[in-house]
Length: 302
Image 1 (cartoon, rainbow, N blue to C red):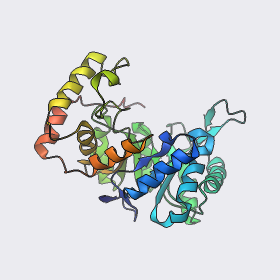
Image 2: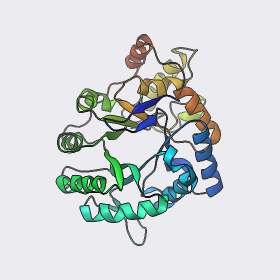
Image 3: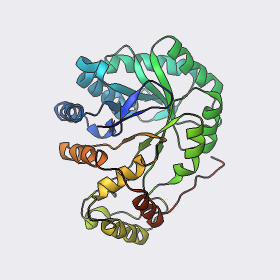
């Protein structure tokens, strides 16, 4: 598995990481998925305190505790579960971050987190206070680096200008090209993008077309546009699977630190790793893919 440096950190992450949200809550199954991921040379695992009310962190912690130093562990903070677990509220305050990190460490059975990420963010937040919390956690050795998970341009700009983030997690795929308008700015700041959702909820996998077109389109694509795009993608180059094209499209840009498809089955995991470890796309193939996929643009006021 090829590895990439995350921002200007000393974290070298596998190009294919594992987004752990889809592990489920059945322990034996979740642990088997993580074990297989490690066998396949994945070293980057991304979870969050939000997932399954902390259960996801517990499962990840249990799976990696005997090989912690071989793993780059990322989790997230900022969403505070209500006591009755009826939902959660946004809380990026310094007090909450410092409280939440202790609970994450316990669940993850570790004394440090490699990458701690703010799980969202709005321009109304006290961003300076949030940055201060992360910087103090770094100084204390509780976290090694921090980043944000956001698709809000105004929030991204604030953190690029004010903080020492090493990464920005963004939804990015052939069907959601919105982050591309920000790539040059992010790269110039020495920050990496972590691409979540690179397979667009399974639309960019090799499942039969009739199994994928059950909804009412995807983002700005109507169902008819989506069908036309997927047919073109299926036929663009028979030597590449759709999963290969999707993951290699994301990895073509060197600002991408890792792509983190989820997997709920061992076979999905194997297919993702094989696709991500395959031959790089040529410049000509990359251009072809860009020609059939819509460019995207975020609403600038967000």
